[in-house]
View 1 (spheres, helix red, strand yellow):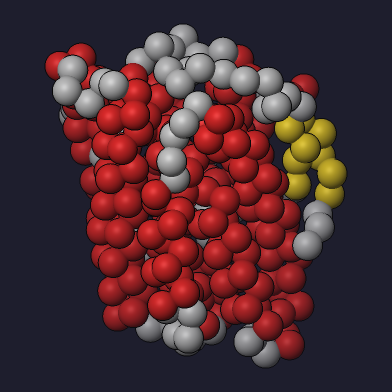
View 2 (view 1 turned 90 degrees about the vertical axis):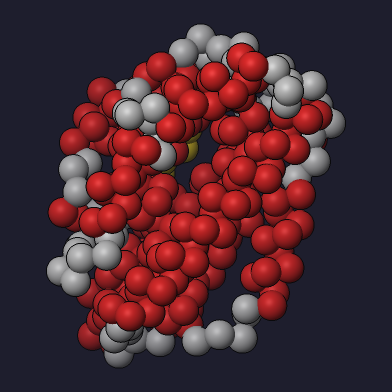
Length: 274
């Protein structure tokens, strides 16, 4: 069991920022904007899935996991709220969140499925976000030239994603979820997540007028597909999820723990809440 602290981030996201807020780089800005566009709906889904999952458990397992789940819900609710503010600025800049519209329909179409399917999908997504989070914390160039408050938003979010990376996985295990369905949902989520982010990034670049610039795709290669890039450089960690004895706590979270410890002046712990 992991103690998860809900934190109030001490930054102002109501102040506007430019479309190319990420160091003036069109691709980095468009890509991270696409990620942010996925967060409010996605994090509400994670909250709902894990909450439904723990309610389906025997009382002893509910008692064992209750504190961690409450912390998970509190952290995800905070992420949802702050990225909602971030996305509000993007909307004012004329960016359209097609990703959210498409994902809303997909979630509606699958709402009837067994609670274990939803918890497995949440665990799979949490694995992806956790490995990307540790990558972010070890690659400061991904936010190079970004104003401090937005760097804080993304690094804080990364640290907390790493911190609560095992909650949904543990609930799925307690529900008696099978290895077969865990891997089936993992592969489905990987394809869906990458497809959604790619399509929204392209849409963002089109709106920004940078879609057909060579510098845009040079930046894309450097960020995602270079030997140490976010996607290519994390393949081994992605693959690790398929091991029969995998558990999220097997993966290193030292950078996340160090960031939270070294930047405690940027947030206020507010305890745990539903």
